[in-house]
Image (cartoon, rainbow, N blue to C red):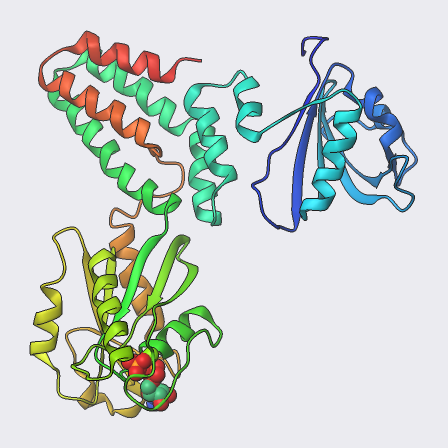
Length: 385
Ligand SMILES: Nc1nc2c(ncn2[C@@H]2O[C@H](COP(=O)(O)OP(=O)(O)OP(=O)(O)O)[C@@H](O)[C@H]2O)c(=O)[nH]1
Ligand SMILES: [Mg+2]
């Protein structure tokens, strides 16, 4: 039950356009306060709609004769969720009406702070609302339901009951999972690079599913870096197509080639693409591999498989045809293995914020120094409600 003096509401879905926006309104006897604003299709008043049952209806205020069609759900006597059209206009009009009814309008983060859920679980809910793929949302919701919190409670017991070796294994495994969480919440930068005319732009178009980049049968077609945001196996990725790299006297093309080299240097994963029909340019490959540092990963891709027969198609890389789509699934699998090498499943504990990594590193240092009490205290403060 909320404090009688407090009525507040918040838009809990992220900014930007989506199919549906969700607003939560909290106040003592919230249904009776919102009665005049919602006319249900069934004719029931808001207070008569059973708890946890959704109701379709129309949101009406004095200035709005047509009304906004929406769905509401009462979660308790003091909490109602309103699901309206996802555009900015609908949600801001409803928030304005709630404000006129005396509701304090909070940001999603401020709203979560009001909830009496644990630190980590509130953080998980906030992070889930910003997730860009279903897989990321599923992993973060598992943390909201307690996966990481429970793992930390287990770790607390392990620290108490055993020597530090076992606890250190648990901490190291959690720290490894943090790398996965980062890849779920921050797009992996994948750069398509290679000599000219090998089909780099055709590949980005094939992955995007539409003609994002110009494809032309002349080397030197792509000049600027072309980006798309997409997802591979549920992991958000920023994919970049770059100019074919060769020696060129053309000033504009040379600028594009410089940018391609810069992109290789900032990528998480580089797809080095070659034409399967051409003799493999080992010198080119070696020269550009040298641009990579230890943490960057690469995949060797041979394109235009549709133009060669089986026996000619032996390669030490992944054979694809950007034209027919053949081999693209294998390429996605290879990318997935680099992004999610441990193949962690939904429900596993995932430290998902730099704060969590920081706490785990500190716990690790305490365990190495055999300071069990300090390690336990850190767990207690980071999981406290
Ligand atoms: N048959 C066949 N042709 C392809 C394939 N991929 C690309 N091509 C053709 O190869 C030519 C070059 O393709 P692009 O995608 O523009 O090559 P690129 O590597 O981006 O070229 P630059 O931007 O100049 O470096 C075009 O005529 C494409 O239609 C493929 O898988 N099979
Ligand atoms: Mg191109």
